[in-house]
Each structure stands twice: as structure tokens, then as C-alpha cells.
Amino acid sequence: MDSYCGCVMVETGNTKRTVIALANPAVSGITRLSATDTVRARIALAIELGLMIAGEQLPSDPDVAAALGVSEITARRALKSLADEGVLARKRGRNGGTFVADPRASASIVSITAYLADAADVHRLIDERVLLECALVHHTALNISAGQLDQLEAYVAEAAAAQSWSDYHVADERFHLGVAAASGLEWALPQYGITLHALYRYFLPYPVDYLHGVNGEHARLVVALREHDPVAAVAVIRQHVWALHDSMFVGLAAGDPRS
Image 1 (cartoon, rainbow, N blue to C red):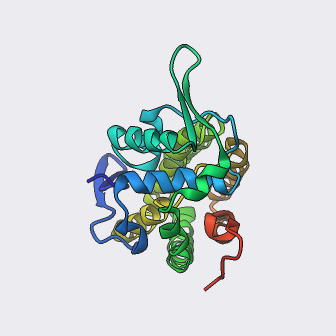
Image 2: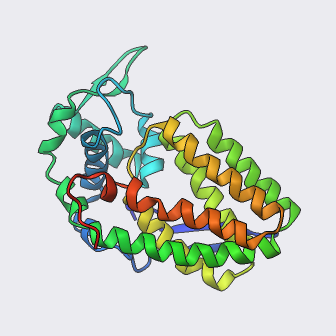
């Protein structure tokens, strides 16, 4: 399956539980796109919205593939096609890599329209995630162990050390799945996985400095969880997820109507 995440391994004590995250995707519009066009749209839209600027270097092809949930060959094909159209530049040699070339060229990538057309679905997914994650975090605050808290702190440190949006995404996913697993509500994890990964499919590359700021909210959540304070923990996570209405492309795109 060459779209984001057919399954997610979630740590629950000494066992591993496989959560089938996208058996019935809660996504409509972007499923019309091929995996290659999905990558093209996400990169081009990030450039169009100014999240990536001229001359900026993208992560390696394998890292782009991992962060966007596609195969390496799909990522390479998508990046090459964007280079062929002048959006990116692919350079060989010691100082080579993939760079943003002409931001204006991103406007010609027609697959962007499938993302913009899904604004209402994205807002719905954010609302659903708010409800699920607030409930899970409440129980996590009551049930989390010292070992699980230490693991969450390790994920926060990993995100803080991330040098690119692709590295950050890996740590972010581990953190949120770790918080959910610590709730003890194993029956709720499949639905949470579906919603989280459906929403991840709409995430765009962001400046890593911005993501480091977001990671500060992860750190504040761990503090509330360590104090076993469900009220404070829920307040942090609600703000953290609700902000996606404004910080995802649905809030950044000019003229986007809230539904």
C-alpha cells in the first residue's frame, strides 16, 4: 500500500499491538490522487504557501518518502517531475541534493486543487482528533507509568533535535501514539490511529524552527502528565490540536472558508 501507513505498531507494556490505521480511510478527496501526485501536491502547496522558500534544500529522497508515507521510488519520481517542471532543482555531486527552485512554478501543479477542495474534510478530521485525543489524554494522565513518561520525554528530545521536517514528523508520530497507548484504552486506539493518520496525509513540510516551537507544547503536556493532572493535560492537548484549524493549509490558504 503506497499511501500513508497501512499499519502502526503501538507499544503497550511488553506487547506490541498492530493497529490497522487506514483500512477504511476517513479521507475522500485526496484518494482520487495517485501516490506520486499526492507527494507533488504536498511539496508544491508547501512552496506556494511560503512554508518552503527558494534555495531551501529538501531532505534526502528516503527521508521524504518516510515522512510522506510513500515508497522511495514514488518520492523520487514525484521530486523528479517537480524538477522537470521547474518547481525544484536536482543537483548532483558533493554539494548536491534537491532544492526549491522557482516558487512561482508551484501554481501550475494541478493536484494542489484536490487538497484545497478537501478543506471541509480536513476541518472535520481536526475536530474528530480533538475529541478523541482529549478523551485519551484524560485517561493517560490517570494511568501513565514512570517508564512511559520517560519514553515520552525521549520523543520530545528527539523532536527537539530534528534537523528537518521529515525527522520531526517521525518523532511527532511516536509521541502522539505513545500518549494514546499510555491511556490504557486499547479499544480506542484503532479509531484514533485512523483519524491521526488520515490527518497526517494532509500535513505539509513546515520550517523546522516552527516545528520546534510546536514541540514545546509536547513538553508542556509531559509536565502535566507527570503531575497526573488530567485537567491541565486536556487543556494543553486541546489547544495543541485545535490550532491545526489555523496552522494547516486549510487555515493558511487565502480565502479558505471554515465549514
